[in-house]
Image (tube, rainbow, N blue to C red; front, side, top):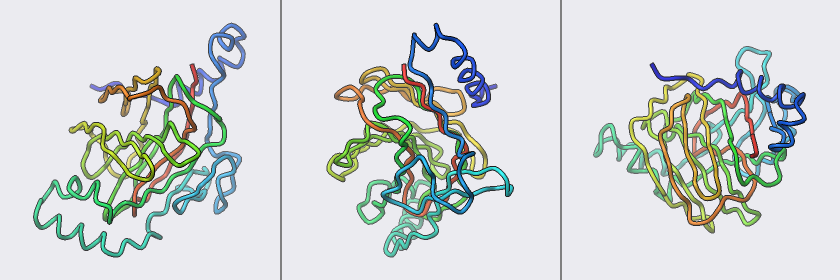
Length: 241
């Protein structure tokens, strides 16, 4: 049985760290976002949302969540391309349209709680609940003021993990890992571990990816989505090391 990573345990660590001067001296204090201070229907108070339809939503009417409503995206030719790809490529149609410019719409939300992340861990608890063309969500990192960034993506259609890099608005697929079980309409914990230029990607406590970037990570962090994905984020934790 796969060991499932739990944000509950991480929150317990955050509380312990805040009461342990020795531990805080060894690493910077973790920064935890659970959207509890935000109002449902409003905008996320600790985030910049330059692209996409981000707001504070809820599932049960009580717990605030970060909500990306990709239903508001007007894909135009993207739906036609998706239909054509389904007819030609069958179950692998989503991989075919991944990097097409016609489906190149990428909502991002930048977290203001961390100015510059270089080493450590980022953990995000997410659930994807909709999307006809795409069902993708990612931890975004190495975000620069000019819009360049890197994202490690989970996909509930393809059940894979993909590492993307954006340079001057152009995406490049750095590595794709197949057979990453990512169920639709269920909560998952995605984790990114960074040590200089070396990164590792986890889903639900299991490592699926290792990769070395061309240069060390240094930039802002956040959440990434794609085209018409409808997704919820329950918690976002940054543990600088």
